[in-house]
Image 1 (cartoon, helix red, strand yellow):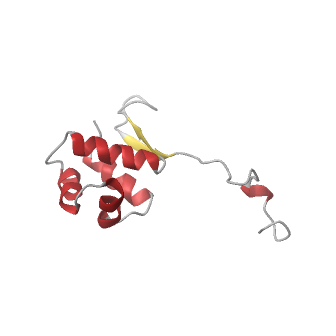
Image 2 (cartoon, rainbow, N blue to C red; image 1 turned 90 degrees about the vertical axis):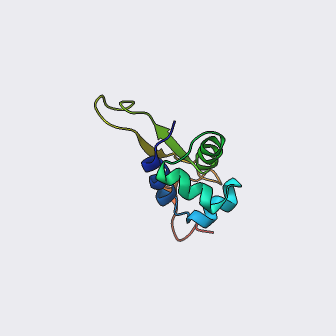
Amino acid sequence: MITTEQIRAARAMIGLSVQELAAESGLSVEDILTLERGETAGSESLRLRQCLENRGIVFLAAGEDDPGVGPGIRLRQRPAQDGMRPENLNAENDG
């Protein structure tokens, strides 16, 4: 189960408005706001979680990284699209 704080933090981390997240997840804006207030759970929560995970969010359970620490989120690192590492980019090969 993801928390309301994780939902809001995940949306902020990837820069999605409530309207954008609703369109992408197939949920209504009201469904998203209701989930962010913690007033409902179930299939809407699962759909929202799957949508955010598809965008690279990793949900962490309480104590998963450090005992005594609450639940959180991370952004999954994505490999470079063309196989070139970011630190190897320069003006000559930027294209």
